[in-house]
Amino acid sequence: MQTSIEKLVLIPIPDQIVAEDYGFLFDQETVVTSDTLPEIKAIASQFKKLLKNTAFPLKSGDDEVKQNVISFDMVSSDSISSPEGYVLAINNKRLSLAGSTPTGVFRGMQTLLQVLPDAVIVGKQIDSLVIPGLKIVDEPQYEYRGMMLDVARHFFTVDEVKRLIDQMAFYKLNKLHLHLTDDQGWRIEIKSWPKLTEIGGSSSVRNERPGFYTQEDYKSIVAYAQSKFITVIPEIDMPGHTNAALASYPELNCNGKATKLYKGMRVGFSTLCVDKDITYTFVEDVIKEIAAMTPGPYIHLGGDESHVTSKKDYNIFLNKVFPIVKKCNKQVIGWEEIESAGIDSTYIVQHWQRTTTASRGLAQGAKVILSPAKRMYLDMKYTKKSPIGLTWAGTVELDSAYIWNPSQIFKNVLVSQVLGIESPLWSETIKSSDDIEYLAFPRLIGHAELGWSNPSNYNWDSYKKRLNKHYKRMDILEINYYNSPVLETKIKL
Image (cartoon, rainbow, N blue to C red):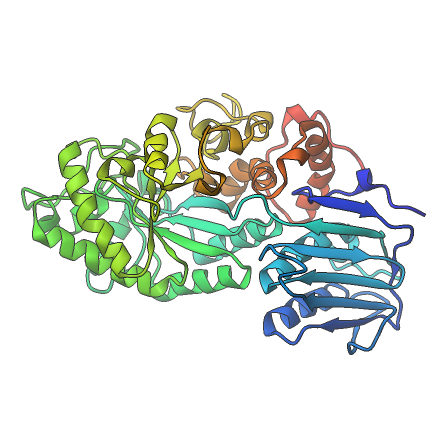
């Protein structure tokens, strides 16, 4: 019996889906084979663990097996050109997942998890299982598909961040941008400047959740993200948003006096002293230590809302800091304002507010990450009645978050200049994993589809139906999400 594609709940929607006449039946003779690469073996092992409470515990087989086999394969890039692309093929003889890289196989595994019934995901004992017959050929639209978590306004523990990483991976996101420093707190240990966390890590918005990551904590987060094929991007915001640093080391202030720790929500009032040599010694020490712990290619320098730094001083500062990042073999990302310092094709600007500002960066050859606040800022309230969140960019309901096309924001730019999209979550009003999830889900899922799926597959009506059915899976995964009225009522399955 042919599988109805419309009944599949797949988010992000794959590029190509074709139904097969027959599905794959698991039985006591079903075997699993995999490529010898450790990463692929780990994915195959994860799949086997999912079925441990079934009447057909999976056994390992060899490549000679042609029927009743589940295979996790590596193929040449000639077969699957995208490093994150995969082919999932399911028929009555074989369940095959293939990619040209371990990353591609991992992304395909997330689709396979969505094909599996809820009973398998929750570990229920089951006596029979048939996987629908289909063939999916899939690859991402954008190479950069991220989320930003602000841990500076309120601190979130290592376990809370790892929980978010698990959720991001399930929707094929591949970048975690950590906003590690701001006026309200400094959250990453710098061994050469220990007071940054001793003093700067002791405050937060309303003093509700102070704290910081030791370097071992940070390395743990980075390694865990790597295991999910997610790159961590650390942000050290400068020259503004620096009150926590200024309170920790008075020499970073032009008057040599320490500022008071700040627990409010106002922005734009702080700046490093750009005329002092000690400022650049500080910046170099911080970036060196962060870069040494960060295997990913990027360092985010912030650069936004530095309202009390003159434009001349702002540009002088960045032109002294840019080479420090490059000397550490990292690529600079900054909020769109950094374009004023003079950039080129080796830089990345992150668009959040003014397209005219970001366009000036694009005109200089830079690439862009799209985070338009009116569509992608997860800290915006859904409605004015939302219990947490802000409204300075308006309210962002589920339809507003989904019904737009990232490729249409900037006209007449090279396709290659649009690196991808990122959903920022600023934490002024949030202080728990439940809060993170309430504001992120399900808007983040829609953003994940916009980042991964081909624009020809963007369809609000289709997405709305799939998301409505997907609520049940989020319930099983114990994600605290916003139940939007624009989806009408939940569909009972």
